[in-house]
Each structure stands twice: as structure tokens, then as C-alpha cells.
Amino acid sequence: RKEVEQDPGPFNVPEGATVAFNCTYSNSASQSFFWYRQDCRKEPKLLMSVYSSGNEDGRFTAQLNRASQYISLLIRDSKLSDSATYLCVVNRRPGNTPLVFGKGTRLSVIA
Amino acid sequence: DAGITQSPRYKITETGRQVTLMCHQTWSHSYMFWYRQDLGHGLRLIYYSAAADITDKGEVPDGYVVSRSKTENFPLTLESATRSQTSVYFCASTWGRSYNSPLHFGNGTRLTVT
Image (cartoon, rainbow over all chains, first blue to last red; front, side, top):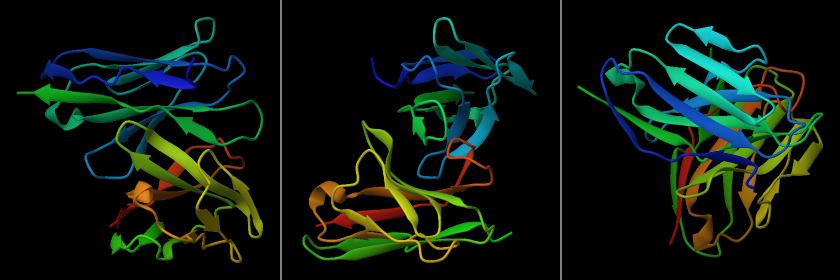
């Protein structure tokens, strides 16, 4: 199993739709989870951290399922400006170790 | 808010040449990282550093050298560039107290090796 796996997409959705991405990780002891957003030819930017109890930031909701080792990102009421690649990020091993990035899921929101 | 800056933004070099990519941050962050991003591979960690004079290898360190004599600078050197090192290189740092705190990225260097 790869360390971090994501469906590459693309996900093509109409404006206003709800879309969900999942990401699976291999190390059951991983502790740090994030979603990043990357626009075409730009640097990745932190979208949100993912907490054990789940968390929400406006139209974005992140969930963690430790039993099944996946995290999810839900985007409600999609906007054209949400079109980007979404990267799942996990720490590789417990303790003070660098983060590992998934290859990303591409989202296109269509008018 | 100068943040983290990379230079050059674009670089074309020939196989066998030595190339240095610069990374400078103004936040005095302890932790700094170099990633490369390629189609089909995503972001892969090259080297990372916890502080001045402390560096460690990441997933793909072969062919690269780093140094960190000052907290704010973390240059990446390709000792003898190869075509397989054509990529987008991102430097990052974190305001957190550990390697697995959220990262803040520079805007990247696009390197082409001919």
C-alpha cells in the first residue's frame, strides 16, 4: 500500500455541487493530517488541518477515519474558484518526521 | 511580509553543470525543506533541516547537496545536473515546532536540464 493515495480525478462538477475526496494512508500511527490546495503552476497552500473530531471551515469539511485509515474533504456549494488540485498530506511515521504528500486530486468546477 | 523566496524562478542548464537553487525565509523558522514536483510523482522530499548545520536526507537525495550555515538560507545544489532532474523545485518552511507542522511554500523554481 502506498503511503498516501488519492484518486487523481479529474472531478468535473457544476457550480453549486457538493464534491468529496478521499485519501488513504498506510501508517496507522500517523498523527498529522492536512489538506493543501495547489493552483496550476503555483505553490501548494494549506487549506486546512484535519482533526480527530472532524472540522469545518466555511464550505469545507474535513474528516478523519482512523479505523479505515482515510481522511476526506467535502466541498459544498462549489465555486469556479475552487478549481484546483487538492493534496492530501500525512506525516510518514509517528514522532518528529517530515510530511508526505499525495499526488493530488484535480477538481474542475464548471459554470 | 517577505516570507519565503526562491531564486531563480526559471533556470535552463546543460547536463553536467552545477546549479544552485536559492531559498531565503524572513521568519526565522527552524525547519526548512526542499521538494521536487513531477507529473505522476507528486511532491517528493529531497532534503530537510531542523536548524542551522542540521540537515537530513529525504526520499530522493541522490545528486543533490544542501547546506544551512544560516537559519534563513537553505540552498540546494545539483552537483552535476542530469535530465532526470528537470522538475519544479519548492522550498518550504514551517512556523511549527516539528517537522510535521503545516508548511509554507516558496513559489518554486522551474529547472530544465538540456
